[in-house]
Image (cartoon, rainbow, N blue to C red; front, side, top):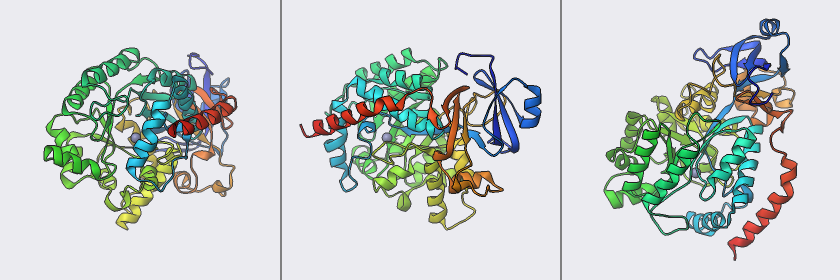
Length: 453
Ligand SMILES: [Zn+2]
């Protein structure tokens, strides 16, 4: 079915993990998809009798879940040097020896290629919605690539007005770039829509963040930026303002339900309170913290935010910070870290991990009304897990525990986004990834050479 076919009927078959409010799991189930939308969820026997001509995707032993939500992902900058940045470097070298020169050397073609490859990895791991957070130069090329791949996405043009690194600009100019993206990709106008995206950290003036937050509010979209994956942001904010970062941003009126803060690992008690009171969402990227040695297992507050009703999404960050674009891996790690840290088996469970990967992640990015669960009327964003692999043998009596603790995105075989069958038999149907291999390798070599030029 194509995304434009509004009448074709498909039944996605398997054990349906709905993630609806009752967390119903339907064994021998099915999800009826008509056009872009879920029309019904029930038993396959009932649904196939009602829709005898429907195309069937999946089999009785498959596990069917909502598509996964990635609340923080860079799809450019790192992709073409995937897993090349060494572990044993400090943050200054990571930024000025790698991130800045690599971003500076990126062409529009590189951004588009990067986004295509990132989308293929995400989609084949069941990720159907991505909040993109780090495109500096060619966001329109990224939007084209994600649209073509069939990924649901929110993106903007990364901006900052402090420091003299390449691409820094006065606040007016940064905001003009954001407005251009919002004009080109307004919400509700297709799978890919614009958000306001700043780098965050110490790279935004008070003037910029206040006006950027207001711009997002006025356009009815979200804003995202980075803060406090490590302790350095707090040191800088205290030195400049006398307040820690999230307290200061709250003083400015810049936080709220339209804000997704990436990371928020190193928060003090007052900042945790600010996050909860303002209902600001946090995108937690646990693999990035482990890869970059940022101290989440020592200082992280995400588990507490979760237990106190905070709004949380999971993210995979970048291909040199967590590396794998697989939300299920992040979900298992998030929950595992918190269970271990608290030494409390009741604190958080594998079932919560799937909530974070689906409905809670969707809520955190402002989209729980349309995605994040398998319910009639929602968009047909669906992942189908093949359970023929050894990690699924024998099938558990609790498919959620087996999905989180024994499996990951690699068992995804079919994926629909807005009803479009974008992954079939484990292959992305929208992007011919084999045709991109030679170019990706050549651009990797060019980018690595350009670092040393
Ligand atoms: Zn990031």
